[in-house]
Image (tube, rainbow, N blue to C red; front, side):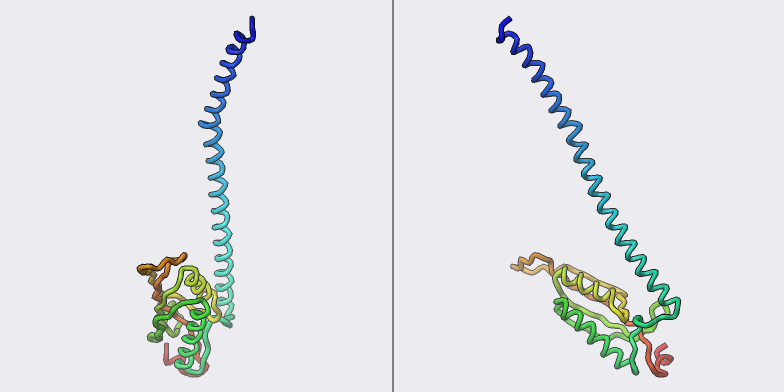
Length: 191
């Protein structure tokens, strides 16, 4: 037998085996690896979300313990009169908005009211900002001490002709409540 007769007999089975191996790789191993990678990524996302939830839960439990123990330092805004508290809170909200790049359209006090047995001064805020700036502002409000509570929020994306910002511009309308403790007898008058 010559090499020219032996070579096709060897190459044909090797070619078939290589084709079969490629087919197995493409049909079984590659999709399995992709599926496995997707599962690992999904698990990592879920673990991150669980950690965020645990952190939020710990903060809420600490706040609840603080309120239950009677330690209300840092929760209530304190002032001699309701008008003074209104001006103080409004000034603080404006400062936070300015620091975070919000373009305030308006910030107006609303009637003092109760929310879950807490009396406070209310505000309606209207502003527009890039999404990242708005998120930073909302984080500052959420973790502010004394407390600022968001009662209601309305968000709407603003579409402006010819504007090519990397971040969308959002219009926001917030109803905020600042829990209030007056230093004199006006506390009973508000309740």
